Length: 172
Ligand code: IMP
Ligand code: MG
Image (cartoon, rainbow, N blue to C red; front, side, top):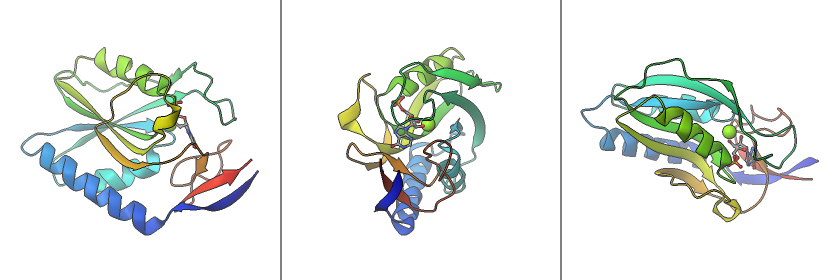
């Protein structure tokens, strides 16, 4: 396994994060959305997006896991650390790193909807639409990417490479 090539540069990522931040700020003008960060992958994107918002905003964290150090989703999604915060009547924006098969997002939506928010939208930095198994709706997408395994900017392979500033493909 080796890092192959840059897929999305740091400058492209930063430009797109600012755009999405502006879009969410417009869409939630006069509201106070709650951004839910899906750990661990979305942590880096979340930190940048959160600071790109110009509306008052709260944050909550949830940790899910589906991979066992491989590159294929097991389809079995575990809630490692649940939501403790009150989301009742809140306008929630779920922040994900990548939507691949859609299994993780489905589990996530069930966890959040059980807390009876007023509304839920989904923001994902990356989308691999050709890999979808579970139909899902994503309201804000950073970049659509082909069916290739990527690391960096929060995304890992076997828990490594999350600290890289760009997004890379890796060759298996
Ligand atoms: P899904 O449940 O198959 O949609 O997968 C979602 C989760 O798998 C994401 O939140 C990521 O944590 C992980 N994932 C999917 N594709 C990649 C990738 O290319 N690189 C790193 N992690 C990935
Ligand atoms: Mg993830």
